[in-house]
Amino acid sequence: MNDITLNTPSKNELIDDLELAMAKLPLLDLEVVNRFTDGMYIRELHIPAGTMVTTMTHKTQHPFVVSKGKILVTSDTEGSVTIEAPHTGITEPNTRRAAHALTDTIWTTFHVTNETDIDKIAEEILEPKDMSRISEAAGEEVEEGYKQLTQ
Image (cartoon, rainbow, N blue to C red; front, side, top):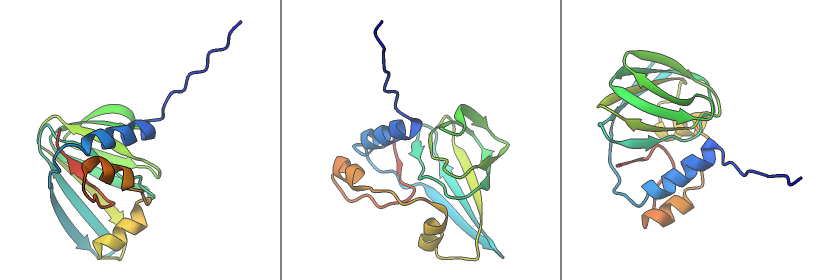
């Protein structure tokens, strides 16, 4: 009997491939509203309908709220789900997402920190990522962090 071995890529590998394909499209600067309270960083991301976004891998558990819109999300931890406002969820450590905004969407995350420097907060809450392949595909330097690309 012949054994068949399937090499099924993980969602992270699929998101890597998606990012490489997306890097060939124009970058879209999304509106981000940063707020700080005593011991907390709040990041509000405005995602226009039709926009694809990917995230870095999160180091920490933290809550998120979708306060407006409808968005299709996929990750290893959540599978593929459609989230519609109003929705409150928890991001678990090692979560990395790809998402497609079906309508204009507002996604807000809440991070426990006393830091107010965005770059330092990113170091605290996000796993580092080698952006060289994405930069090569884009034909320009793409910085590490939340980079949004159009569909």
